[in-house]
Image 1 (cartoon, rainbow, N blue to C red):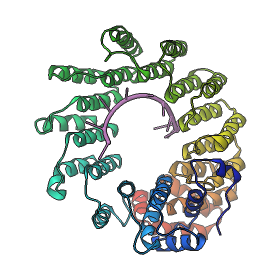
Image 2 (image 1 turned 90 degrees about the horizontal axis):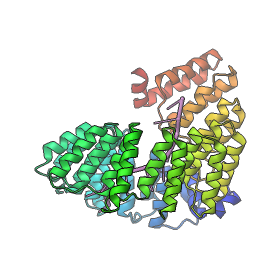
Image 3 (image 1 turned 135 degrees about the vertical axis):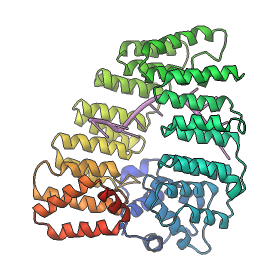
Image 4 (image 1 turned 90 degrees about the vertical axis):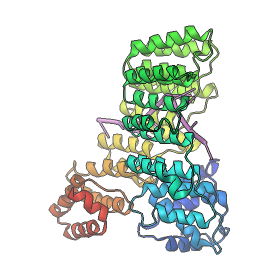
Length: 489
DNA sequence: TTAGGGTTAG
């Protein structure tokens, strides 16, 4: 049995009915499913499912499930049980699966076995494979592994490193707050990979994210001395660096200079990214009026705001001004034909919740479900958190339970933490039981609670006479090796 | 399939 589609889902163009039905089905499977059992369950629930599954459909399903890597991979591996011979797997789908595999370190189907599967599928180890692995290694806190892979990739995979790939490695390191490591790597490998403007911009941006604008400026100087001309990106990176570091005056003067010199040299001419940076930077630093002036100025000059510009303005208005004004801007952007995206809804819903206007936030949420982008897990988390803070526990639990209903929006680790930690404020035995059930579910889905949270739930269950359930959680703890490691830390 | 602006978070 599978759930029927709510009518609103059918009106969305992004969700084809089959895609929505299949992802919903997968999201509701028991956490003990295997690739084989998943394929059998799909076959029996969808007897008319085309076999082999068409490439674009399997890719869309995988992409939809990607916020839940374990489940997504379960689906990917089930493809090999669904039909014989196995379905065609595109390079794109393969690399998505590879990226997901690298996100689930405890996955028994780890990266090397996926790489050999790739070879069997005729997908060679390419620059893309290298970038995917580098990005995932760095994102999962293993920067040294990424560097080692880059250095030894020719020896082990017969692939020559290119400057774009070197730049991608540096970028991944910078985004993972390893800018110093990136900079020393650049110094060490300078002769092998002569840096270009992108290399310098990447590291400069890394320093700016760290609020080290002076180091970014030093790098800019070094770059010019080496004979590499800065681009517009370079200036926008530095400009953003000033605002991020709270150097509003420097940022403002830099912006004025860009406008002045831009009359002669178009490399300095502010573009929509420049204006968005200034609007956001001024607003966050409490200069809301000036942010609005700059916004007006850009339109006067014929520079059209994008959805990011409106998002910046809406966010700073929510944070430093009046939510009602932010709502007006939201309406204005829609009238001007600029489509709101998931970021727009996130900042505005958050702003409304923060101002205590829960009803209005829910209205916007409903509107989003009907006519906007699919709500993501962060939006659910914001709404649930505020409902719980308002003491609307039943409402919050109701929304939480609806999360898996349509499309891939299962609760993530944050969602569980938000709800479980609030199950102790009313001091009701049934709340403790709910917390226990949620913790069981979260562990089954591959999210590890902190030791503090685990013990809190365990003690709660013991104190309310749920000895059996407490024992079950302890057995679960034994079963999950990684969970055990975390809890004993 | 290399770099810049907008989100999630107390």
